[in-house]
Image (cartoon, rainbow, N blue to C red; front, side, top):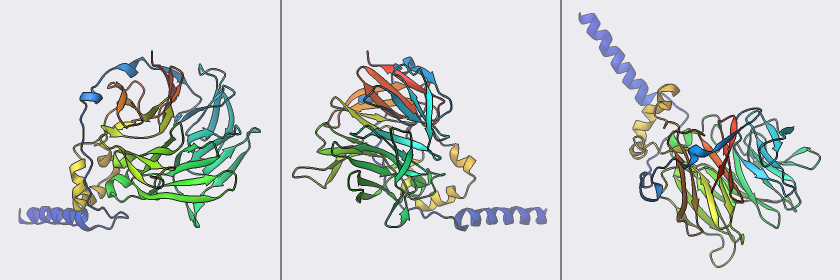
Length: 352
């Protein structure tokens, strides 16, 4: 019996020592999460997105969707394929493969497709479907997770680099609470690259307003949307656009006075208090990944539309998650084209 008790004590002491002091590649810090507004008021649950029409694709992961001036649509899939289709999702044709993981994409004023590729960098697909790399590093350091973009009328690409950590485990940005994301500007005419803002919590969606005097960008693990002024007396400054969000904001697009924001998952409220206790989070980081993933929220579809004052105008949800992990919204007249990082389909939702 004495030997048994000794073994139990040894196991407990060893386990506590492991959880408390075993070396890990992350160094969590304390940070307070923005307030959680709850699913009430302007975020009241509804079943609107359950009416989304789903269109099958050759593979999974249409993270972003864009329309060319000639009427064709494009999306990029997890296997690197760039797929072209019409407004109904028909006549699908694989026109290229980036060799990486295409995410956000936009059309240049001259009609070329610019793609934020997580693996390859900021790349261009020309009219002959030839791919070329525009940006993949800054000051000699590789950019590890180029994520989303928008393009001005002058040909300036404003794009996000979500994180400089291991891109295969993006959740580490949240567990550590050390911001490593950034927003850059790349001039398609001069090929000059400049840093707009660094130290962002998983910089993600980027969208210019109609007059292009500012853009709104999301910090996914900062639970916030911010506005960066490009022109006027506030040029070069950042202000809060909305930091009372019920979920993690992803891509941002703009159409007819509305900033559309995809919310792929709900916030993990039970874990957020631990943001203020780095030692406890470091213990959790020593647990198997399967244990950490157990706290991830269930399927839940949500997208939000904000006016230019940051007020909620559209609140579209589906608690059943028929179309899960929505990462982008593209409005074309009264249709919303929905992308997802994980689904083998894209969605078409009618605002009618």
